Image (cartoon, rainbow over all chains, first blue to last red):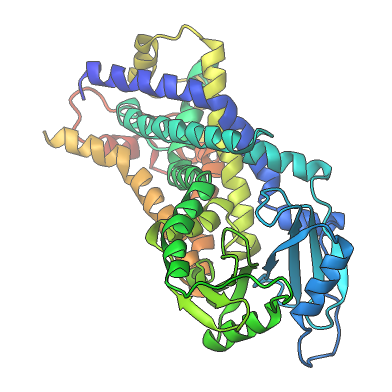
Length: 393
Length: 88
């Protein structure tokens, strides 16, 4: 690569990094505790485990659970019944002031066997909620989410330009060389390059899937406006009947019978954007690996409890659904979560060393950087040669 | 021409191996809950281990604290390095 081309990439790296680094540092720092969100919630008592009971009898009627939830907040609507593969003995009920409200008003936890009310998840409270909101939308709603997505894209550009610069920078160095005895700036430049190259693939994947996750509302919106609308339009028109309360229990039973071996991800109630005014939509998940991350939508007539349509989700929704585990790191047990945390710490090192280099020499020119890159590796340093380890040879 | 290819190999061998290993680990845990998950722990754990190893300077005792640069005109930088430090 010609020095001119390298210079161009140097400036791309500098400016994309400058634009995104403050937000990326915030995302990496808040992301660290969020890796263990589930565990922290349980430790703080925000969430509960299903009690240990011997009972293996029939499971509770979901309509009773819905009735109980409604009685707790008579003015609110049940939006979703949510299941969890990791906690098969629990049902979660999400309520809101409006069937389509983005903001939940309550999140109840029920025992799926006895139907007992177990716990109300404290929404919008505690330090983890603040950390989550900073990471998710900086308390600025959809605009904040999309802004962070854009910052993620700029960050991906910074990563790619960083990779382009790694080649010319390393021409006289070996992998992992950190010149500790030269100036502080060279040492930190080496640390920046090394930790950047080692974490590149992980950062690229977590960054890009994070960007995709910021698009979840428009992505599901596109599916609702196209495929879901088509499935609903293909059904004979039916008037809502306020005298009949649709049975969520019968709807779910019908779907479970049609999809053996699958479990409920969530079921949208009639009137919700994920369903229709006269249909439930049950989103089922496979039992294993990547199929447990995808969703299979079943449209169920709310009054006859019959499945009226089932269509695989389009590729762009599947891409979103697979982006979630790849961003959260919650798909390989506790060891993967710990690795996620360690990689995140290395990413913070990349960012902090980058920020340090910029602050230290705000006027660092391309020429100075290029000179550092072309400088020979560690030259003869008598103090190191006299170190005890030299006696080995 | 030869020298350029060698430099490229020296610079990119480890990054490419680490990148492939990481990518493999990220995918296998999605594909399979048993062996795939265990592989992912190793495949992502190795780069993490390598990182902390080098950052802590644990590689230095092996090379006695300095990196030897090949003299101008040398065709194989790795061989030079080995000659200088690898006699232990």
